[in-house]
Image (cartoon, rainbow, N blue to C red; front, side, top):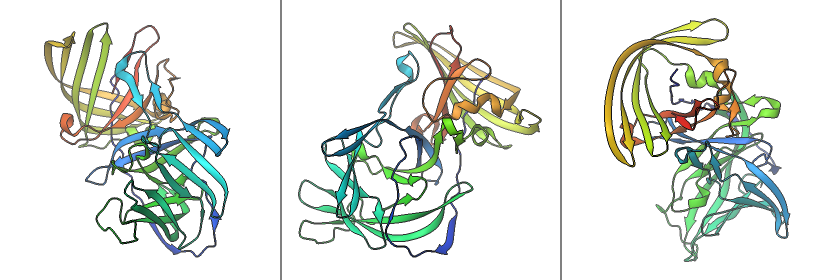
Length: 356
């Protein structure tokens, strides 16, 4: 069976309720949970899903350090290696400052990015300082109730950033002037940048879920990934390796019809499949085959439940397979079409295979 990907469009509902609040402590992240962030494309849809978690907590001389998982080998093949350094290598919590706990993230050059978690309206602090002395100022501008995930609302503080020269002169148009990010009461940071490459990278990421397998809390599930409608165009890439030979299949699936099926909950899809399979040996293309077929595919959600495990470790599925998933985005390969990557196409003894 071929596992097929799908981007998930998420609607964020803005509550009209306004709140006034004194300073409150909001955690920026939860070490016992894995965080899921997504980038947004020009259409406002999710285009890439990123997973990160705290792997170690260490008391250091300057404060409590939280180390992030930065590299995951998803299989024995190099094809399946994922680097996860979005939040940098670690976060340091400085306690006892006049402003309360200060959370410090670090970019690749070792420069500090400061975020407070004891917040009140109009609070101000220096978020980041450039080499020339100019700086980014953070200011709390809103305390409100927002829909931060589908069906989930939470109170949050909104922080606006502005850039100033060393003498305090505003620098409009310099990233990230007039950008904002949110800190939620129960979900922590709901918007972040690529701190490891900050400020060179202007890509912002939005929270899409938290997961704690011990509590069975899953905000991003298989049903959201596999509930397709008639007319959907779904793209996938299947890649496998054996010594110096690599088989790559680029395919497009067109959903002709969708019918709900009974327990286990899922759908039966009539799918038109088109694509091309390329064999390369030692980096040289040996053969290219194309295919055009129409077939029925049944998707049972519980079979693929753990494909949305945010732990980013291989887990055993009900049918004996192992795997997990992530969303990726390649505008050159698929002309801007979003697709979901499933590292899940191998059984014990099959060797190393990545199926996207």
